[in-house]
Length: 482
Image (cartoon, rainbow, N blue to C red; front, side, top):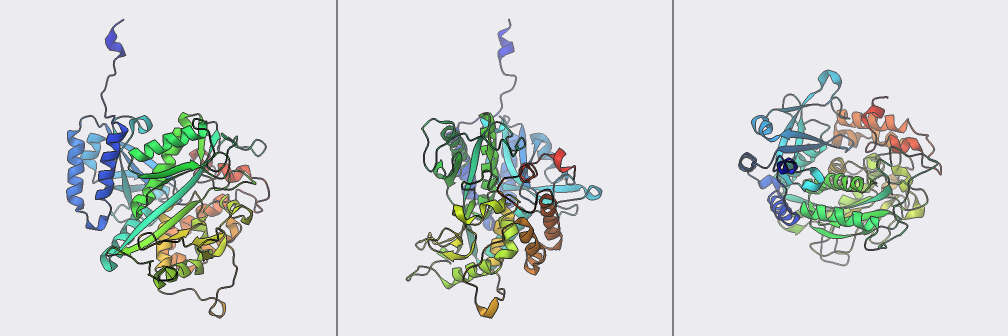
C-alpha cells in the first residue's frame, strides 16, 4: 500500500492554544476603544495577513438575528478578499430581518472583531470576524442591534467621553444526549449528566471535563478567564471571565454559547441555555454588570458611606421605572418566566439592594474601580446586544416615568408570564423611541408567535412547546410551519 495515501492532502492553520491566546489577547486590546481606532489601517493590516497566510482557507463571518440567535457564513478567503465590500446574503430566512420580496441584505465586516480559532472546535484553516447587517443602500439595518449598540457606544464616547464596561455571568445546563432539546418530551424530561450541586463535582466526571474543555477554548480566544464551576442546580455550570468593552462582551456571550454547544456535542451531550429547563430547581440566568467611566473615573462611584454616586442612583431608578416595559427584552421566551419564581432566589422584585438577591438590580460593594450595577433578572437566552443597548438607553435617559404620588410602591414584581410582558412591551412609547417602530413590531411579532404555541398558564410541568419552539432551539423546518 502506498504510504502517501495516508498523508493529509492539505496543510491548514492549526495553532497551539497558547499561541491562540497571545494573538487573540493582542486583538482584544486593540479594539478596546473602537472610537479611537484607525479602521482603514486595521482593515488593510488584516487583509494583508489573510493574503499572505497561505494556511488560512476560509473566513467565518458571524452575525445575530433580532432575537439573538447566532448565525455564521464561511467565505472562501480569496473570494472574501476580492468581495469584502460587497458581501450579500438572503435575509428572508433570518428572523426579524427582510421579507422574501426584499431578501437581499449586505454584510459589512467589522474588522476589529478578528479572532483566531481553535482548529479542534471550528476546523483547521479558519478565522472569524463579526459583521454589521446593512440594507441595500448600505445603511445599518434597524434589526441589527450589534451594529446599533456599536454606533451608540461610539456616540457616547464622542459626545460625552463615556466608556462602557460590561461583565456577564452566564449559566447553563449539560444534559445527556445530542440535540436533547429537540427530542424533549414532558414525560421523559432532560437527563442530568451530574447529580452534584454548587462547586461539587469529581475532578474527571463528565460535567467537570466539559467545563475544563470549554474554559480552555475560552482562554485561547482571549476571554481572560477568572473562575469556573458547577452551579447550584445539578448538571448546571458557570464559567466566569473578565469584564470587557461593551461590544466585545456581547460578542463573547455568542461565542461562549457556540463553543459550549460544540464541546457538549463532541461529548454526546447538549449544552442548554433555557432559563428553566428543569422544574423545582434553580434556573439559569445571565447577570449583567455595568459600569461607566469618563476620563478614567468611574461615574458610579463616590467616596462616602455607600461609595455610590447620584449618577448611578439615577441610572438605576430609570431602569426600575421602566422595568415592565423592558421585561420582554430581559426575559425573552415563554420559558424565561418560570425562572422568575421567588422560591428559587429569583430576582423578580422591582427594586435594588446591596445584598437581597431577589432584587432585580444589585449594587455590589465596590471601590473606585469596581463599583457597578448588577442586573440580575436577565435570562440566559436574551439577545445580548439588544439587552445592553436597552439598559443603556433607559438608564441614561433624562426623563423618568411618573409614578404614583412621586413614589414607587414598596414592592412590585416583574410580569409572571410572557403575555403580560408582551402587552407592556407593545404599549411602551419608550420602547418605540429606543428600538424604532419597525424593530419593536418585528420583535413583538416573533415573541407573540412563540407565545401562541404554548399554553397561557405555565403550570407545574415544563411544556414541550416552550422547549422545541424556543428561538435558540428550533430548527428551520419547524419554524417554517407557522
